[in-house]
Length: 259
Ligand SMILES: [Zn+2]
Image (tube, rainbow, N blue to C red; front, side, top):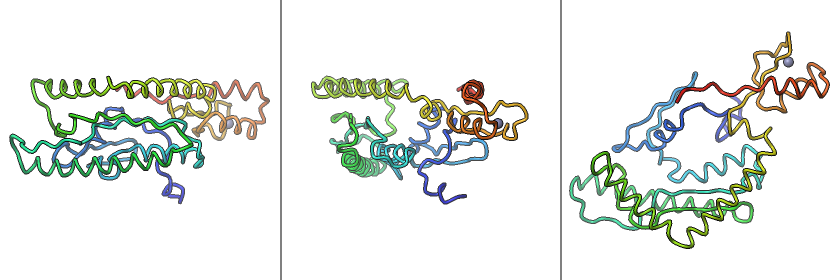
């Protein structure tokens, strides 16, 4: 292991876990949701508590993306953070399981305050360098227990979440912020599509291989167009037209996992 690997927040290329497994792993919480084991190639990890290091992962995401760009202050242009509901109201009369409920309310209050602290940290970190939007239902969601699932297939719980969310979304200021966010995101997406070299690796997991005959590096994966281009120029002394052609030929998408 090299020092860089220790210091990197999110080392290596993108993982190929299905998104539902990642979401499930972040939800793990002792006594509520079981730990989740993720395995890929020779990597194995068990995720036991998503709230342990980052109740609100926006700061982690912000710093991770910044690091991918050599800690460039302007690496993140827009950050949209969606909370799981402010914990403003506590229900003092739980119908059953009081001890577990009391423990949960204590934890929930702690998570909410830590999440709010992260929100303030991200607000400070992004000030003047990025547009930061935070959306969070303010009333009614805090009463819902982490493992609530009432009614057939949880329909009552889901309805409650939907109603409280719709009330929040009707607030004029929230609507204004959503429109503004959408406009900014479209602008960023348009700008990004002109710099495909940089983004296809992180967005689509694209790698490049050298397709030149008898190449000593034919089993090597190049981490981006520019790496393969450099290889073609330096090792094969290819002229620009061949470099472009062979770079297109060498593009490899990650295998479809079928999930
Ligand atoms: Zn080669």
